[in-house]
Length: 116
Image 1: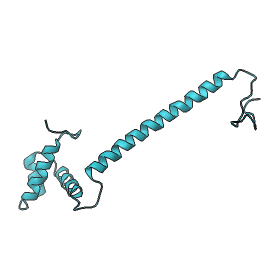
Image 2: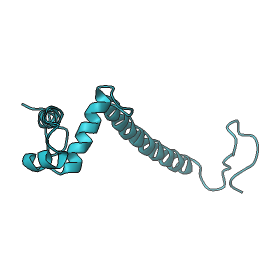
Image 3: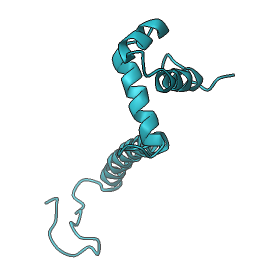
Image 4: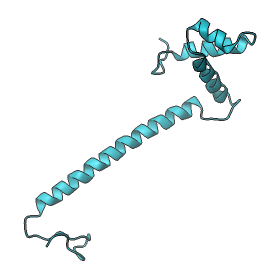
């Protein structure tokens, strides 16, 4: 089964389209894209990414892009988890302190009081 990229086109289709463009310099990108049923800019993007992956052009490789996407997603989840834990810690500390008890602004119990 061909590997899907999460888009409408498989990696196999993209690779074949790029190879066709490389092996048919007499045909324009626009003409090839029309024949393949895709937008010409889509084909240009695939060709550019293939050049990057082969080291012929500067930019992030496909693997680097995938890793960056994965790390950004992981980072977003970690930020959300941190916010949830912060809220839970505040809520938990407010329940533990009864009315009239003092909540210290410093870890050691010294310093300014947050409640009167």
